[in-house]
Image (cartoon, rainbow, N blue to C red; front, side, top):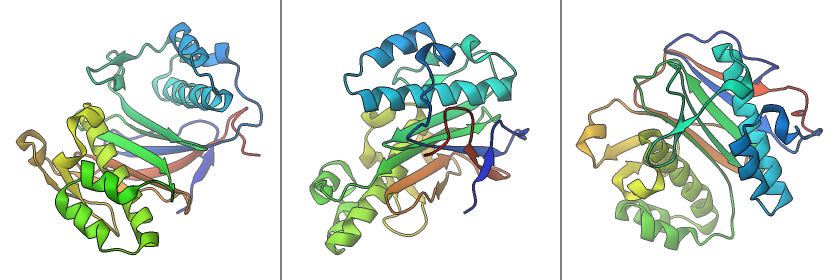
Length: 244
């Protein structure tokens, strides 16, 4: 997949989906007071790990930068509200977004279609995680059994394939991990796919899931409650975001 390198967004049709990628580390870290709100600056300071703090600043700065171009407002003027489970949204604009970051990758998904559920997740693949036991505890039994039938090397890739689909789904609902990763069944290998959903309110929707290829070190997926007309893949390039 080719990522179109851009310094600012192109026009986006209502029913299209834009996927934005930011790769770290930053050449020139963006100052905390350039784009972030007072609350975000305070939240950044609570990170004791400098690397984690820089990643948080980059993720929020990139979000404000992109939204400001789509919505034609200053980044500092954007006011985020949060749903009960903490999912941020903009009540004053008919625009929907979601973001996820893991180590050196940041992903954003954005659409003008506010009538859909939308979520994204990215995870750094960690071969040292106890994938099988985590799956048996949090996934559907059939998924855990399918994972157990794979070789150790295959288990790791399949686990993160499962996890990113499930987390993108629960993020799309706005309820987060508290909703339960065992309430939706997804594909164990191959293409991403929402197979079954326990909740009737969500089960009736025509969900679409798609893997986002980022190389062997990461697994990523977006989900949406209906198929977008077109999907655009962009890589953000603005001062301070160039990859070394």
